[in-house]
Image 1 (tube, helix red, strand yellow):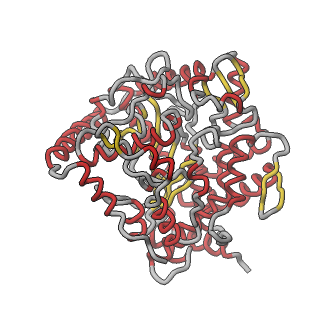
Image 2 (cartoon, rainbow, N blue to C red):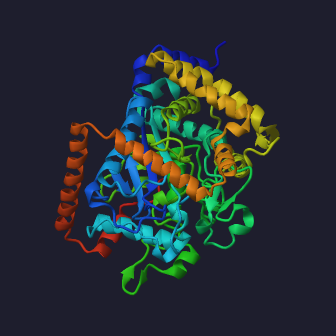
Image 3 (cartoon, rainbow, N blue to C red):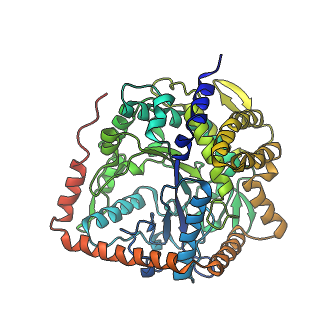
Length: 525
């Protein structure tokens, strides 16, 4: 008798149009730096358009932290091609400030001098700015300068008719995506082992004095954890102690959105002590556990697109899951765009595996502590010889479990290749097998080896990598029509921002209240 996963694969094999309708997109962050690798102190370049309204180039936390956004695209080659083109455009229009091609930050100024992103004077722009001011008060600015690659993935709605249970297409879609999220949570540690590329930091990152004692000093300006894969995803990176007790439910969307609602409406004493205003200006949106839904740090999120003044949690509950966003990928310092087509193809096979394989519900309250602990352990000690993880309450070696998972992913890689007319997804598995066989092949090990062998500081090595990529991107250039299209998008975005600013008639305080009211009542199961 065929397993349920085998039946689902057979169904997709007979419906090639469903696999061709898979979409993937990328949101890639990167710090602008000067020629010495110091954080750029300049405003967002005007040549790149408005950070508020340009659909391809915006900023994340800091004015210096670019975010490059692709469209949802049908294959990995096209995806990485578009992401690379956006990098080329920035390199041509802002040549003097390379993008730092590493997740852990470049040399940072004193925390007070790290600029918070500015989006103009419209209410929607001010909302984004004040939200980021609140992040600074809550977590500090240094942590917010950590960068990563976010990978968006969706299956066509009709695929869920056979891949998930439910009475309506919407029910089946939500059930299927939540099953994908649960499996991703179980196996996310594997991505941190295979692709984690942030085992080291520069001294300037250690402005919080408690960090230095936890790390090994590799050289005068470089600190590391010797077996780490991703300091970015560890408790030394992009983490919040306040959020550590937020155990969201991944068993169903209604409970998930209800718990997020609770977090964005429940006051937190330390944030109440900060207050919402200083010197007559708003410094955070509210004093709740989360100011807004996007403040929740997680390795994966169920997502739905939102419009102006819409709340992500509300539209997620009302319209259901549209796609998932993978948030645990480090920037690849060897890839000019921060991620390679090979990695994208592996992620597609991995995520299809997560969507189709059996995904039992988590025990109540619907959160898997074991999975979280495995990910935390691998981020800090993933290359430690003989490392054991917890699998259904039993100890299992990382190496054995990783090998088993790759073998289970292989049929999904074959399935994707079958309908792509290539062998790229299977080919993408080979280097992952090599990393499991020998941890020295992992990006984290390769980076530390390069620092030792070349006698370089983490900062200097990363700056050289980033400058070499920048020079190559400039040399490659763009076709005239592509360059003109990006230029036009930049101009249009400036016009659009100006129109938003001219159209606002409501006070910002009233707009914030309207934004909070848009959350609505807590979703009911």
